[in-house]
Image 1: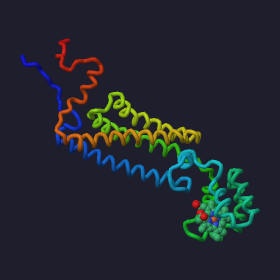
Image 2 (image 1 turned 120 degrees about the vertical axis):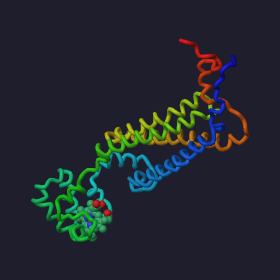
Image 3 (image 1 turned 30 degrees about the horizontal axis):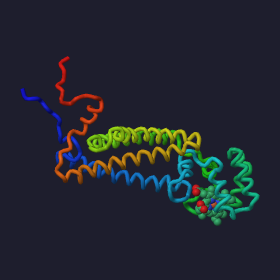
Image 4 (image 1 turned 90 degrees about the vertical axis):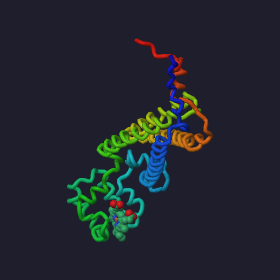
Length: 270
Ligand code: HEC
């Protein structure tokens, strides 16, 4: 009897059949673009949270934890509204804010402070909060508590489902790579999932304590590096390494050998 060998020696990225390569390369190209756009979007939204371009720890803290030392109105009264109204009015407004910005105090007195000092613009210029109205004053008097639980649950589940899918396919393609040490391959494939969990967990933790912002950084950098590595190795093997006509053998078989299993042995009847 002829010895059955089903080594599938083409089962590796350089020797993969062309239609499958087209599928893999097409996917990686689109995903690569997507990841670049995701990076850009993070820079443009979270990156500007502290008012300065570029992603910093403060951005992450402001996005998830908020800026709890100050309400917006207090920050403005120390900043661009410093010259508006009298210093006494600022003091009264800040006291009202810190005492909980109640409607009772508003009606009793604070309404008039705003009327004398602020409504010349805030109440006339469109787009600015209208300080004739309690609701508008209240909304800028709130302490900024960062992301809400609702928005975190929404973003978390979209992120976990969506990104796990991306990493699954990317890791699946990369599993056919040859010449990558076995342990490195396993670690690189596991990393994005581990860092994804670290990343999402860190948003929630940062909401409760700003110290966890570090984990958001580490998580993001971790899975960016792991996926960039998989992307370049896979592309290189399919597009460049494939050109020398060599047969590289079954990329998955190396794992059997590592476990001491001889792939030439017939399966035993059980
Ligand atoms: C001369 C017109 C003028 C006066 C008077 C004025 N503001 Fe403003 N205010 C502005 C303009 C213009 C902006 C938008 C630009 C900015 O944020 O600096 C603004 C923005 C703000 C914001 C931020 C609004 C937001 O949603 O981003 C707050 C809070 C604020 N002002 C509070 C006050 C208070 C309190 C007073 C009274 C003590 C006051 N302003 C008086 C013109 C004025």
